[in-house]
Length: 168
Image (cartoon, rainbow, N blue to C red; front, top):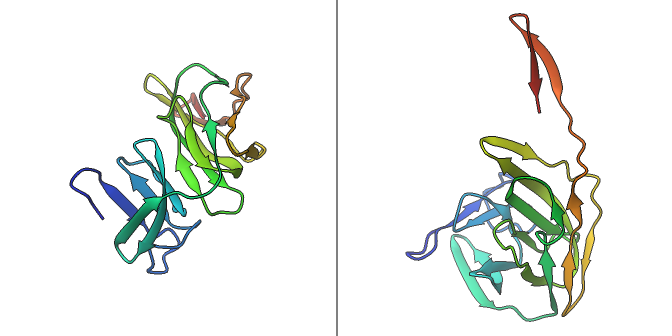
């Protein structure tokens, strides 16, 4: 699926032949970082209702309570946030928020960070988000996530040709 102005990719994550499964399929808007397919999507920082039928997308103004979700203000780590995907706990909404430094409008509800990739130079680190709690985004309020330092690193240790190998 592609617009002349904005590339959009739909991904059949569950392999059932449908690209319209909210909460289990994925969508990448304007780049290569995908988020779970939801009933809403951010385009140029604006929130829209989204419906997928086959390979067609239908957009409409989002109707409902919204708040702002900010993953940058209270992020405490060296490096750059390269990917940050949140998903609502009810599976109906998902957003990739790494580029939105001032936060983004999202439907009010509870969200979990499900993927985060950080970069410093050529190095990349994927955050383990399994222990992070859900964030409650209330209507007409801004919710920021306090995260980052202090960090706990996990490595796999091995040896090759007599040299110690660390794999983060």
